[in-house]
Amino acid sequence: MSEIERQAIDLSYPSAGIALIKIQSEPLGVLRFGVKQALQKNLAELENDNKTRCIILTGSEKSFSVGSDIRDFSTDVGWLLENDYIEAGLNAAIEKSPLPIIAAVNGFAFGGGAVLSLACDIRIASETAKFGFPEVKVGAFASGSGTQRLPRIVGRGRALDLLFTGRTIDANEALEIGLVEFVFPEELLLVRAIEYAKSIAKNSSSGIAATKRSVIVGLNDGIEAGLAEEKKQRVLTGRGKDAQEGRNAFLEKRDPNFS
Image (cartoon, rainbow, N blue to C red; front, side, top):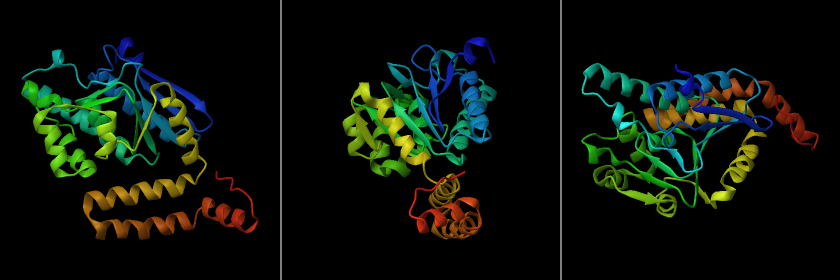
C-alpha cells in the first residue's frame, strides 16, 4: 500500500467509544485497491481494540465516495475478478462486523461508493447528498454486492429503476424510498451522526452484536435460520457480563455501566 493510499483514510475519535473513519482519497473519495484494503484493515483493528463501540464512516466535504476510478479499469479477467473480490470482501466485512456502522453520506455517493454505504447498518445523509448507480452508463453494472444489497433495502422495483437507468437521486428521494434513514442539514451531518452514535454506544455491545448478527442471518438465509441464530445469541448474551449488569442496574434503578 502506497503512502498516498495510507493518507486516504483518516481515523479519529470524536467521542469516547466512537470511531470516525473518513475517506479522503482524491479525487472525490475514489476507491482504489489500496483504499479498500486500508478501510478493511482499519475495521479489523477497531473490532479488536476493546474500546470502540460504534463506527461512523464518512467522506470529504464534497463526496462520500464515487467508487472505483474508471481510469484504473482493465479488461483483464484477473483484474476484474480481483476488483470485485476486494470490493465485495470489504462490504461483507462491514456487514459481518459485530460493531454498528453508520454511513454519514455527504455529497456524492456513486457506484461503488453508494454500494459501500449499503453495506453499513444505518445511512444518514446531508441535504446535499446525491446517490447513484451509474455503472450501466459505462458498460458495467453494480457488482461488488450492489445488485444484492439494494433490493433488500428499497425493494425490487425501486432497485431496478436505479440500477437500470443509472439516474442520480437527491437526499429527499433517498429518504422517501428508504435508502437512507435520516436527512440533516449539511453543516449538522457529523454533529447528528455523532449524537446518534452515542445513543447506540451507551447500550450493550454484546446485545447490539447479537442483534446485528441475528438480523443479517435472517435476511440472508431466511427466517428459520434467523430464529435459530436468535436462540444461539440469546444463550451467549444471557450468560454474559452485560446481561448481569443490565439486570442489576434495572433493579437498583440506575443507568447500566456496560463493559
